[in-house]
Every structure is written in structure tokens, then in C-alpha cells.
Image (cartoon, rainbow, N blue to C red; front, side, top):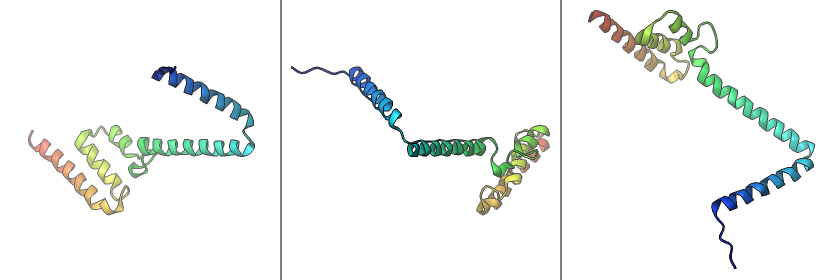
Length: 121
């Protein structure tokens, strides 16, 4: 006679087996494994911190300083076009040295767009 397993039965059984393995292995864990786990956790935390700084305070925008591009843009209420002008000038050559000219051209494009906006008024 065959038992007809469904997905829930299989998953519950699998989860229980994993819990048993973890509980038995936990008490047997030696200092080497603990050290490896601590190193792995530290590495994960470092990677998370690096990812966070790449999102929150990228070095090519000034990092977490008084002169970070977004702080200057907000403090001076520059708006979109002038804000992008400052952003591209402040990061020119810092994010990618080979694209410094491209960053400066982008800054010029946004500055010219703002000049045209003012001229159209």
C-alpha cells in the first residue's frame, strides 16, 4: 500500500528533520565552527555596511560629509536641473575616471536646460 504524500506533508516532515539535525549539531559544534560562523557573520555585516554606504552616502558623491552633493543641493534648494548640474560636477571623474568628460557634458546639458527654462519665461 502506497501513501499519497502531498506537498504540505513533505515540507512539514522536511522541516522537522532539519530542526532535529540543527538541534543535534548545535550541541556538537566545536570552537572552529563557531569561529568560522563568527567570521562569516562579520563578513555579512561588513558587506551590508558597504552596500548601505553605496546607497546612502556613495563616495563619488562626497560620502557622508557636509559637502555631500545631495546635502548641498537640498541646502541651496537648487531644484532638478541645477541639482543635477551640481551632482555631475561634484562626481566628475570620481565614479569612473574614464567617464569624467561624460559627467561634465551631462552637467552642461542640465545647466543649458535650466538656462533655456529661464529664457522661456
